[in-house]
Amino acid sequence: MTLDLAHFTPWESLAGGLLLGLAAAMFILLNGRVVGISGIIGGLVRPRPGDAGWRLAFLAGMLVAPTVWSLFALPAAARIAAGPTLLVAAGLLVGWGARFGSGCTSGHGVCGLSRLSPRSLVATLAFMGTGFGAVFVLRHVAG
Image 1: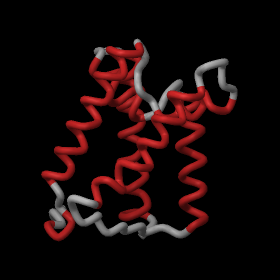
Image 2 (image 1 turned 90 degrees about the horizontal axis):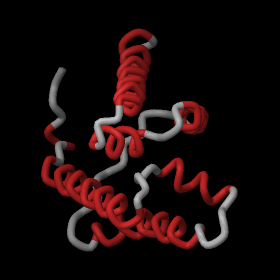
Image 3 (image 1 turned 30 degrees about the horizontal axis):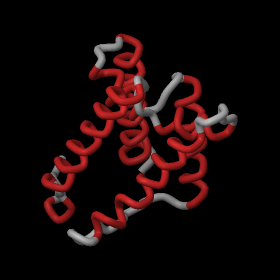
């Protein structure tokens, strides 16, 4: 295994992780809810009265943040080594997995693990193990 130093972004990654952790901590302290994008989007499908505003604001922040970041740093070059069919299939599988696992990687991996949730530990191990396995099969077995 080699480290791709041309695309190694430790400071940007650290800043993103710190911001995500801060946002998750503020969200649970201020709202009493864990941050999980699948739950936030899912709540927009069948919104409760007065519940859509904060969800839309959260999603808007996710869309605006990269634009603001690009004012201070060059955006990373996107490298997608998959075709549209594989991307759609992967997205559907991730969506199904998040629904099946009662949460997504951000809900379980960031918020659940920080609360020492055993269910989130199992879910995160399943997400990560499946991802590792898929990459190994697609890159080393299937070629």
